[in-house]
Image (cartoon, rainbow, N blue to C red; front, side, top):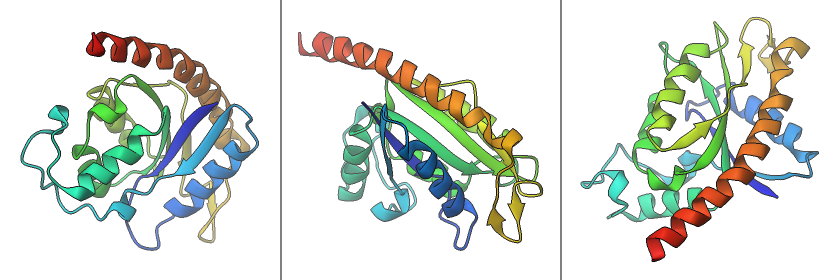
Amino acid sequence: MLNIAIIPGTSRPQALNPQIVSWVEQQLASNDDVRAEVVDFGSFDLPLLDEVIPAGAKMYANDHTKAWGAKLEEFDAFIFVTPEYNHSISGSLKNALDFVATEFNHKVAGIVNYGADKGVRAAEHLRHILANYKLAVVRDQASFSIFTDVADGTFAPTEVSAAPFASMVDDIVAWGEALKYVREADAEEQAA
């Protein structure tokens, strides 16, 4: 079974994000190959980045960083649910990602994005950020428009927009299982 963290992509109050995160969680609930948990970086009280040593060294000084990193370490895979703000991801998501690094190494991710233009620019920017963590991002993504997939403030995905989600999850599971062996081999090499 693959452990997947669903990462909300914004801390903005009254945003659409919680509705889409809930939809993702519901879609995964019926999949026997995964165990999913919403992991909200807002729950870790992360300030603006306050670690002196870069995250790649994993020499965290602050308890909030240690807790955030330890939580991410539990998972084999991630689904990021990100809005598009000014052609990118939210500042709060970028800040949360900057605290950690190796917790994502040799794992897999999928992206669910939304916005006026379906959030595709945010997804492309997020792919570049995640590549730096040695985090494999599957090709398919679910992209939602605030004009056609939202009705009166309520998330109501169209079939066309939601369809890629299933193949995205299939790839996450396949890649996630394969990458478990990569992490095991890496751990053995480091122990030797």
